[in-house]
Image (tube, rainbow, N blue to C red):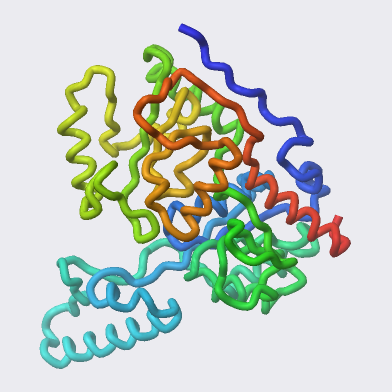
Length: 371
């Protein structure tokens, strides 16, 4: 069996801006990540922090919405208004419960499917608390890097910048749909108009780098090293409003559950096929480290990490269609036809989007004399 060959870890001049290589002498020495609880969004923020060499020096906060019951009808509202309405509803409900029964302990507001609802126990992002962190440590540690992702984080992030503009450097992941001057830098993909506050990249930000792949190769060695080569990894998402499956790869009405049931029915007894059951540990990083070729459905941007064959990209619209076109033009992906020689490989200039955003942060800081 041919052993896997992973690239050596990047040198200090590859991928990490020099401003973040100086340890205690760096301008940015710690970071705050403001997430919305969705892995796809938070992983992009964490990937940027990792690229800046601050992964061990960051604190994660989350902006969380009330869940369940009537909240499912309120999620389209701005988060501040959503929470206010939910608070009023809770107060009214508690008052009615108090009037009708003083003997029993007040029950929580029930959801439509049973159980309790409300705010998560996860530490909530508080703009004043984060501002105090920035002010208290500014003299010793310099500006605080704040990285936020997702629509619900915008109000908190912009409040932090307004209250401590000189003591924080604010990066917003994806388009905030608001005045860009409220942020020091914003990242998005090339479908948005250029602006001095905007960094445009082809793909999504992520946490995967050389060190992570080498670690995964070691962790998953016993599971994947004995397998016959080439090893084909297939990642299947689900239909979305921007990428609907047709009658080719699957009927448009199919849900992810129906797709998975069909796959299990057809392939579960094939000795050459292993189907992950969703239980931890997740083998995704092992797949990236040991896989020789990849086939993915076209519905996900963040799913694409290496040269891959894509199913269904011709059915995508708007941003996803542009994204797949860009990757094809760069030679990163090819359409999946079913007649491929999986042992064939190809090379292309690597996409290093996360490091590109990190470099831009370095440049903006340097322009402001923060070197």
